[in-house]
Length: 160
Image (cartoon, rainbow, N blue to C red; front, side):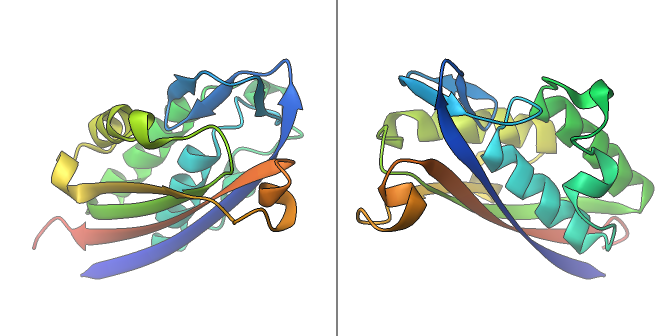
């Protein structure tokens, strides 16, 4: 059996916060604001996996109203979701993700993000795609008020 899920996340940029993307801290004068570490790339991937499993969204399982998730490391949430993937009898086939941000330039950080996420997802680098783009100065991303991320995940049943 094959399943496909789609995820999307957005967070506001704020002074005094670390910028965490794909579990990697990126040097920048602003970071993403959120209840957890606000790693929107990992959040989009989590949502895509949950969608493929028909289990709702990240807020349903890790609500921002729950103090247990205050300042939570998003990679630890992803590890929990991967337990559910295995329990349901699936494995990750591949992930394709896109980050939308005007700055900082993310190209130098793509490989470390891919390596980090591929390790947690237990897949090869050739199965983990991350791209970065700008919004050409348009909208909240273009005005550098926030960032967004999209992700598509393909799951394959373990018996296949």
